[in-house]
Length: 410
Image (cartoon, rainbow, N blue to C red; front, side, top):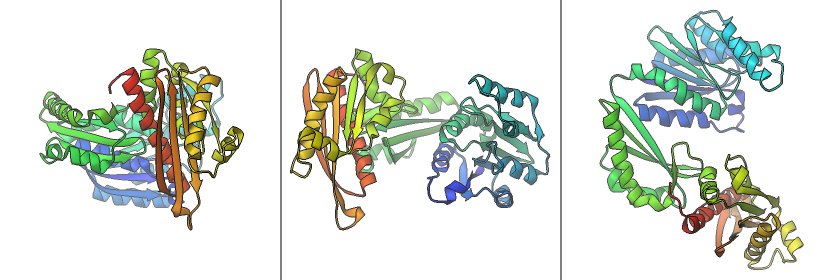
């Protein structure tokens, strides 16, 4: 099966958003054995969307669109698909009722414009969207399949895995495809590849590594005449990889890094508080929205490094100032919020000749019932990248210490 992915939305062409949907779909299609022959981005223009769809129709059996199925006038993916197939949209009463109930459950009245999201064409079946108001479309026509999904990544990913993939399986022949992703932290992509190169070079199952914002992902994919054999191949390879990378693996598939960090705390009835000075709240954002945060995260503070140092009576420009500040803040935040653990991240940025030449001094400290732990890093780059790496290093630091002191495996 040959496929084209079309990402719809003018915001993608402005350079302010990265098209993570296309990357996700490319990886998913590879795992399913679908040949991806093209990826396109197109703005909110009906004529351009239609032109892109026509080109994809000629090139592929499967067309997957993301974005452009919202309720506004510039959400034009439905119109484009309808025009491509010369079909007329109509409001589906069941979809309209579901959207209205979605708003009512939140104490709101459905805006009139949202009725557009209840449109269907004769060759389309609706794809439920439990996370939003925009149902997707699954269209079968003239030997082609067109799938239209929301542009919001979390809505799209869930719809793809729960609604689309099961509908595509009959098109993929009799072979079953099984994939598993192992998520690691504390090791780079090239280092991870070197450690498992012998397993990778066997060629089956297929193993691919990806550097992500939450660490390095190792994806295992196997296909076989039936699911049992594909699953057995994946499990055997997973065991081998865990023997080599086990100390770095924090989870698999849908496990988030934040959930993995909070799990050992929640299991032991412990809690964490965080002080972030100069890191931009990276760790706070990572943990605060996880369900386990209710019992395992007591909160924290986010401040500029210079302000925090001044309040502590530390010379922000003195050598070793990040380490001194982190040690102090880890202890204080633990005491102030009555937490079992206090984590502090201190990031001092030193300007260079250019923005890319900024030097970052990063200090991490963790104060807990079993004593204190410390770590320091130095890195060059743009400030945003320095803060991102500080957050990832802090997550790895916390993971290593908590795993050592509280136990738990991925």
